Image (cartoon, rainbow, N blue to C red; front, top):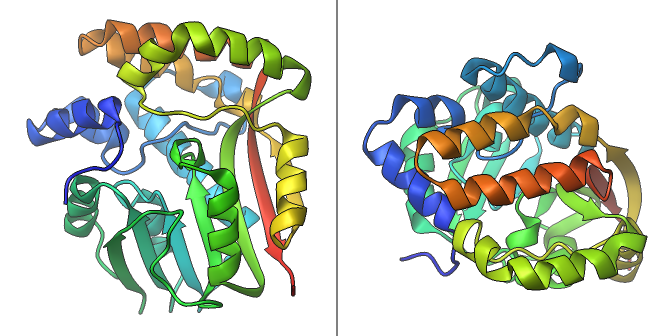
Length: 280
């Protein structure tokens, strides 16, 4: 199956991995998302430091979902299986399913991630907004830095609630604009739509924290964690910009610089959010 979504940066990354580009492998061969530094001033700009920070972000999202041994976990937008690999190393007797709409990403995940610690792992090509799983079949649903690519956050939340058992957790991380800035970001977005589409693909960045709260209530969740980790992610930007520049992706570098600016100004925040599924 070919990709049903337009993700140029993944196209470029997959080519680099195919060519055995060692920098790409070290930086994004496992996780393809931002990093988390407990102390941002300690970031040294190196690839190993970034790779460790990306692992720490994944762990932080998983911890927000209260994951323990023996659970059944669905990772939506699983990429190359990095979050499942992390859980595979940390816990035992997990039943883990990774979902992605791009079969190419899943092929790498299957080749890289193999069960440890009495865990089971499978990867399924499917749409996160139309999950091919039974009701009440998972304890945890994750979406690590990918929900902005989904066709509809509301549809995804409804699907996550459907497949979660009562008391289960949905944990995500997302770039969340301040409510007052939405008209501004919408206006800027009109001018940058083509550039963003040509670099990062389809991105919907119009969901404020208050909208997330309303959506959670509407779809059968209680909000449990709202953690702003914007400052902890900022060291990601200069390193990612450098990697794009070195690989001839000048337009992507410029778009990333713009995202860095709005993050530094606090217009857009990077949040970890977790929600508990409640009985209808």
